[in-house]
Length: 322
Image (cartoon, rainbow, N blue to C red):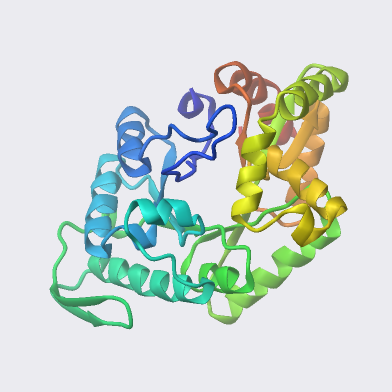
């Protein structure tokens, strides 16, 4: 449906263990690279990302998997590099969750090896602090002579530096309390840092769309789903994993973060009728965003309406081509 209606990409969350609560939120998810292969074989235009925890898979195996997906999609596979934060997931794999800085140091070596495996050269050696490769060899190369798109959603200064150094796209978390001026300044800053390294960096965010014929209907549905029927135990479990509690952050800030987290794992709420949603997206574009990953409560019901009503308005605003 997304392919037929003109959506450009699909981006999955990478999860191995649910968050408990009444629903065991995200307790049942598909592995994202094989998922991407299936979608790429069934579509014509979509770019489909795989979301991969770097520390959980050998870089040479990963490089081969990504090339396989890229050939299935004839160049439409994208890689979302995740450095990891959920200690419970790492324990499942008997893997070490390194300290924050070391996670990105490892991910840098992991990605360096993958890029070497994708490069036109033949055998290669690599000797890093974490990764060693002797006479590495990888064939075939990515489809069409170009590598897959690479993205990262690092929020810390170290994470953003990793994305600026290595990636085509940085996904930045924008909340409802983030002003458009703050968003514009953030985008200007990270792009300037990328330009200093001779690189171009696209900046995206994640939005949770609740679009209905009237703003009142949209607000009522959002409140029904996100507030009245939220799995608050799961939300609190997610926050506790990040050491976010009333004791560590104070009650007021905790409640603000709690409400933000309940909205699609912290996505920017876009609520209203088609005109209002279009204006909100247009404001984000004016602030400098390249694009937005949108999610819905019920995709089969809500995606057709979004594409029929919002996308044509974005065309009329000059933000998309027909």
